[in-house]
Length: 98
Length: 98
DNA sequence: TCTTCATTTCAACTATACCAGAATTATCGA
DNA sequence: TCGATAATTCTGGTATAGTTGAAATGAAGA
Image: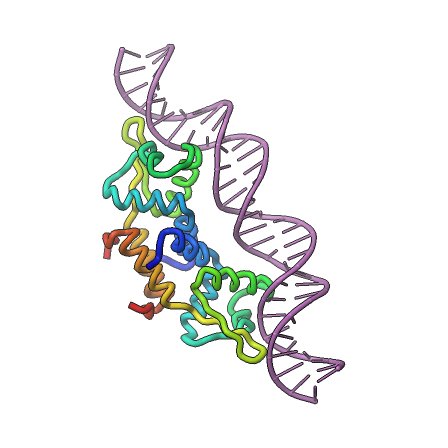
């Protein structure tokens, strides 16, 4: 059950061009993706990507596990589901048009 | 039809404790609210509130019209609806749990 | 164990967000 | 037109976010 404070954190994590692009890539992939592969999707150096991945991870919108030398990132759809529920019900009271 | 760039702007507008509180207040009110009345909902000086209202307005999540000496603010539910659609369909491909 | 690879953390910097007092604009009533 | 009211913009701060190269870490293969 997401509260206002956590919602702000998640919204902030997604409110950046690079981070949103990374998240969308992970959703589209449908499976864990190594950090290095994400570099081909966004035009930033590895250190910058790492900085943003950390932000996404801390907000709980992506998860991460090591496999060999790679760190595999995946979108956490349950966190996103929680955000959507918060925005729709708690925040908008279900009265968004359509 | 919201694109990624606009989504980042809207997400950024909502990603702040005071701004999210203001938006939720406007949704709950269900009708336009004068800026001064919003001061009772958030614990910030008038200039700070004005700063945040401008941010919300520029992102399109609230609208504003003058009535006498007051400026009445209202939540723009169509923009929010657009964001929710973007997050659900374009961004998450409809696969958030529940 | 030494080297390479994938990625992160560190350090230093720049840019932007945020805050709030002072001054300003707009409106209304007397 | 004057004073009061409602809210904003202006201005100058401080804090935090973002960027990036260099160095460090953890894992695997020779």
